[in-house]
Picture 1: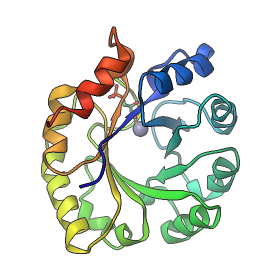
Picture 2: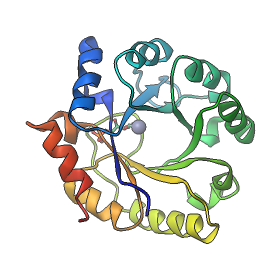
Picture 3: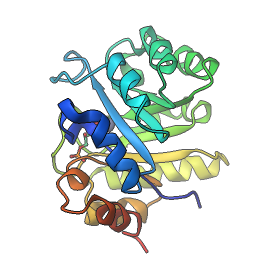
Picture 4: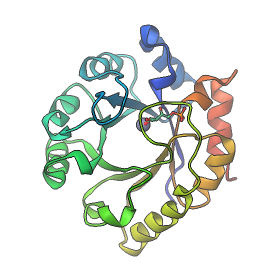
Amino acid sequence: MREILIAPSILSADFAAMGAAVEELERAGADWVHCDVMDGVFVPNISFGIPMIRDIRKHTKLCLDVHLMIVEPEKYVEQFAKVGADMITFHPEVSKDAKGTIEKIHAMGKKAGIVVNPEIPVERVFDLIPLVDMVLLMSVHPGFGGQSFITDVLDKIVTTKKFIDDNNLDIDLEIDGGINPETAKLSLERGVNVLVAGNTVFKAPDKAEMIQTLKKANA
Ligand code: DX5
Ligand code: ZN
């Protein structure tokens, strides 16, 4: 059993006070900081890029879990690694060379992950899973925070977890989108160990308490 980790998404933070927001997450007991990079091409929204990762790096020692929702991620992964990303995940369907992208991330001494959108069968990336440190399953269509969890992904968690176990892989399985205490429980009991949560953490009156609630959702 891998440790359960909570990765609040800073997409729900005040972008003009990001340093303080990240420090607050660290004090509140977050394990990772999930950073949603959007290019307005792969997804219909623009968020932030390399300078933001560079600057939040100065405010926390936590793992920066950088989720690239950008086309041609291979062009940028080295820059994200250089400014302090620890885990870099990308969508293989928009990479010209997914294996090469994973290799580039590893060559920079960073962890690499692949992301699977709700409409993509996980079987399509089975060849890549043995090469990565994490699989991220999207439980919403990427682009915006605050959407509802797509329950179809629950079966995909089971399939992915089985593939990981059958192949004796020691990797993280993360879920992203619409996570609250109820969907956290459903996801954890099927084998996810990293929970991304944007709105649920940022809208909570007590972030520390919410992080603990999510962590123990399946206890
Ligand atoms: C969606 C992003 C998510 C998002 C999660 O495109 O990848 O990380 O910020 O936000 P919530 O938890 O509010 O659904
Ligand atoms: Zn994300």
